[in-house]
Image (cartoon, rainbow, N blue to C red; front, top):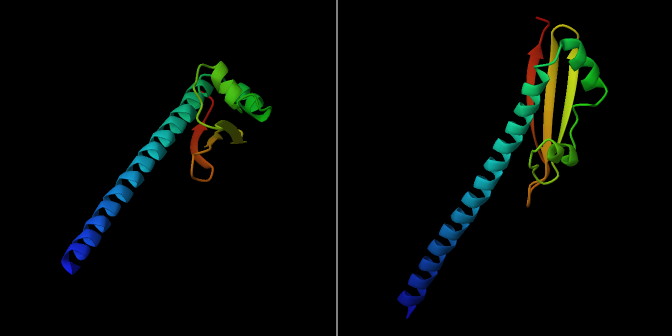
Amino acid sequence: MRRVILASVIGLLGVTGILAFSSNQAFLNISNRNLLIATNHADYLLKNLKQLPLDTVLSEVRQGAWNWSPKDLVAKGIIPLAGESIETQVNGTNPIRVTVITRWNESGRKNRNVVLNTLLTKH
């Protein structure tokens, strides 16, 4: 009888470990997918920003024209993550450092963000 109970406990621990591992893997898969999507959204913004003259970039970013809410993302044909918003900042004059911060909510975790930086100069 003791052997049966011991074998059952060991089996239960093994199954519990496998379930915990699978659950964690699924969560990490979703988390990494969201990180990739958020990075792509920030990269999309940067690619569009790089097509503008430097003076336009400076003035529009400082006026908040490149800060995108979830509604702005949808209007541009982008499917936002939960609570996603993009903030753009500039520093300097020539070259200027452009910082794009994408923030979103991830279920079961605190708010997450990804930051992309680039330098832009006059041609």
